[in-house]
Image 1 (tube, rainbow over the protein chains, first blue to last red):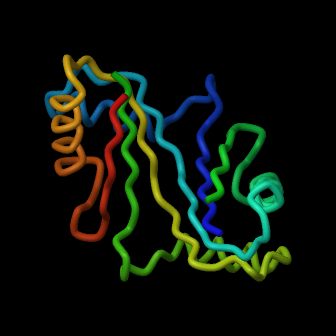
Image 2 (tube, one colour):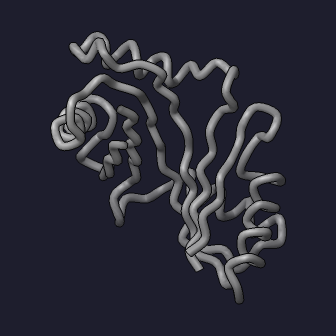
Length: 79
Length: 79
């Protein structure tokens, strides 16, 4: 099965990378861009029987390694 | 309109961050995980009239700033 994990900073946590991208876009003439947030996407294959079981396993990976749950939230897609 | 840009290393380009995540997952007992790729997701709001026009504008941003098209590919979603 193929898993996709999207990791984003929680709302309210200052996203410095997003701010930098926003400033750069403004500088290039796209002044109407706002609210830029930069996140991570982690994709991988894993052996699993059913989607529900695999999803709970991937969530476990997020809690332990892939996301810093103090400041980041995550979303898991299994297909 | 809300735009989402997914940026990934092209196939064949060594993804060191992905390799590091894979090794860490193996070390934590998830040895059946393989093919880990780590990418970026950039989300932002922008003023635009129709989806097609906005999408072509966002692709322009990718070419100029958001992706290094020598080694990275991107996918744009506008909603």
